[in-house]
Length: 214
Image (cartoon, rainbow, N blue to C red):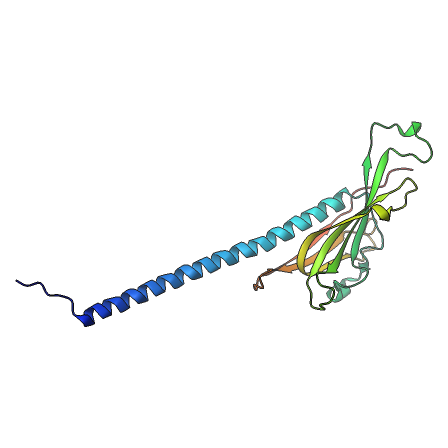
């Protein structure tokens, strides 16, 4: 008995079905890969924001004195009008490092058993020629000399976060607040590849330190 062979039409049907199946599986695979890459990119945005805010938070908690004028103090109703490009939008404070090997009672008038640095966080445009440019968050360190004046000639600045959509430092007016109240940071950042994902944080940090006695 002869075995029946596939006809040309049957082979074409099988080939078409196989092609449709491969195309479907490829689309599923491609979409899965795309989704996975998007999730990774979204997590990268979160990680970058977390690292930057952790650095700022640690700095503020270690600060001995935060400037009373930067960041500015606002009424609650004004918070929606705050802009990254405001010339007063910065955070400035002093950090003190003690040298416990020195006895303060044995020091001369212009000598101290500690050193001081002024730390400043501020934002600049990534591209100053582009009005729609993203922002850079910068950290500046300025040593304070023996006359307790900032030595700006020896300052160092480095970028801690790029591609920012918004970054605002502020305080909220509160007559009952100790010192000048908590420092608030509102920051927003999206993906660098133009993806739709954007994350926004609003945190507050309490000033805890104090300046050394003269």
